Image (tube, rainbow, N blue to C red; front, side):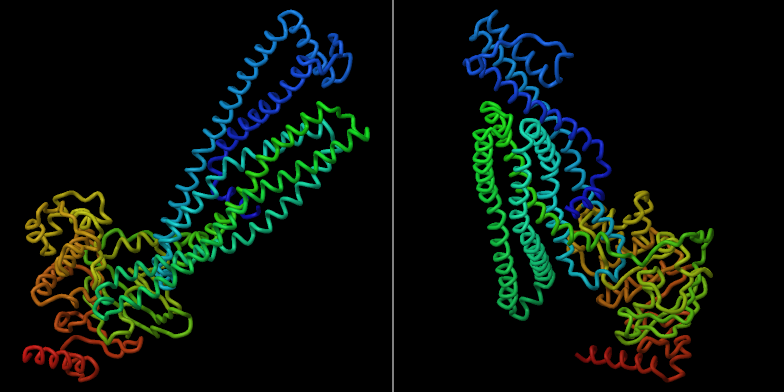
Length: 620
């Protein structure tokens, strides 16, 4: 219950007035239900001569309120029988019962009417919060998580909450009110018998709760397994070319079958325990009725209670009515255990700490950066895991409007270094500054608004070419998008497609070639018009013709901007203002192309190796 109260406090608070409305109508429903039972019993007693008392009208000062009310009601019924006859009175009472039932069902409907917006709103809010958190969490969070498992939490676990917790909200409001109302009537009728019921019901509840705790643990394990299944499926689809090339279909099938069989075993266990809820509650309810029937009958026969036989029948009717909401509440408790297990998995994302935070007093953006912005690395060190340093004591100043190239073997720390500028990661030691201010003094959104990034693998969305270029600039006009496409050497191939700028790119741009995808990502950066440009091996995966077109587009983009280029093909950065050679997380050489060639160190060795490779390719 602690988890449930925490859930309600976190997600149901915005819908508190819906809860109030539902509670009020549930109280009205309970009152009408109790009233209809109380209404029928004395009428039947008088109509069928089970009660031969001669009733006279009493004033409110003649006794207790309850005694006067019951006496006057009986008196009114006897007067009605004498005036209209027993059959007519029975017909009137039947009509009154129908009217009371109509009011009861309308009240019950209104209680659900108010709880439905809360139930659906809570699920929508959870989904929105999940998506907001997924977008806001730093890249580092996803280096330790599988994409399929995150998708399982966003879809499967939220769906489980929708099917269990939120679907039970109406019952959580209605059933306790009914139970409280029925118990109140039972106390009024016979407090001795009701004390016995208070002792009996918690025993049944404890039995059901013990089974429910086991259900929660099994559900959590099953949902973790489902996340693994989705991760394997996602990896299979993404790596299908490699799987087929290495004839690994059987290997992947065995892995997938093992995970699905584990999920099958857990699902069977969960469903069997959940199915046990109804028969167990049915049996415990019947057993409770039998015990109360025996104990109540013994009290009446022994003369130890003031309740008479008809009153005991009414008591048993009320008690039996109590059994249904109690059983429903028990079933809900089973269902909630599954939902709470899903909530724990969701909370791993919702409560994940985001170390990339905005400062309390952020620095304002520079007003005018026509020629780019300066970037400075001062004594920068960085580690992903807190143990092995990926960067050590990096000192580098990039003046406004200049082009700096980073070269080196794979794993030397080039991409990690540039990722520190837009705060994809935060430095462990030292300082990264833009325009004289530490990057953590800017708002994250403001900092990244100054930068355009073109990666080795262009990221496109399954949308139109126009929307992909205008991504991040939703206010961009058609003319601006066309202009950006022309600068990026993309306009001709776009107009050659069937629908031009309205052509769909497909999943991750699969309907376009690598060079076309890269030129669209460059057009996106052109449209953003950033003062600082980061090119992370933007041409390394392209053929010669595509590289030429992309390189021309990049040269146009780099004009009057501070540009940081991570280069794989060293011939593309010969004109850079400064080339920094990185090795094992350190800058080991720096200078212009000619200076580094004359130095005869690591850079010249890399250039010579590429020239040899190029000649070998020509021979082949």
